[in-house]
Image 1 (cartoon, rainbow, N blue to C red):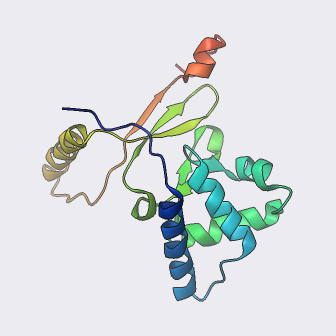
Image 2 (image 1 turned 135 degrees about the horizontal axis):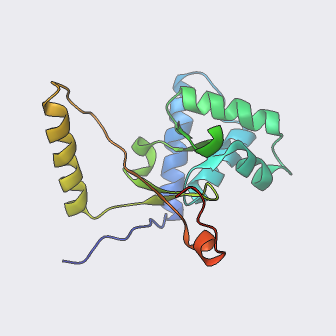
Length: 166
């Protein structure tokens, strides 16, 4: 059995479809898909994991002011287009929701705070879903979703001799 890739390469067609879904969700809430929101969504489409407002500002500062980035993150999160993740040191990072990007998990570096997306093979995901079901059934709880975050030290930090937080 060939393992599924751990990263996802998005085609321009798929990115366009996701942008159309974002536009429809905004339109149904009578909110415009402004240039700033479009650039933010495009930056998150190209990212390999959740990004902070600061990360997005460094990437988009020539075109989108920091205040607009914060407002857009708040608006898009409120509509379920983005999901906030509470990172180390209270630094929130944002990514496009699973309903847009597909189900995935995260590798989180406790040294530098980098968060990378990973996709698990279908068989592994099924095992995790079974474990979640077993763990929640005892409490009379029906799980609707799950996320799996692996904390450790990224390759860059290990190469630089940084192993903080472990």
